[in-house]
Image: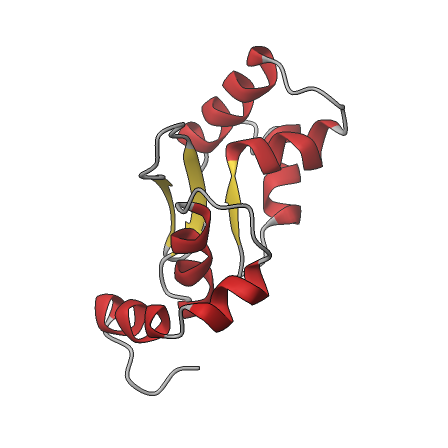
Length: 119
């Protein structure tokens, strides 16, 4: 019998912004507040993500880049899906600069999720 979400799952729910996307590393830094993320931190966050019931259209997707990791993303939010595309790129630029350089990504994401009128 389940006793409800654990402390990590509650922390993930508290951190989850509907228009954001979080990598496992970012979640570890936010939850544990340590300078160096260890394997035990990553494993516990991945296990919590795998076993928790995610609300709405939230999903855990792999990033497609060389040092691949998982990302918590809201599949119904254009902004969240654009952030997922940003996280998959290797260059270390600011998100707002990247978004101004690649405005076509909004149209690509809108087409992917079938949204015509959303921002």
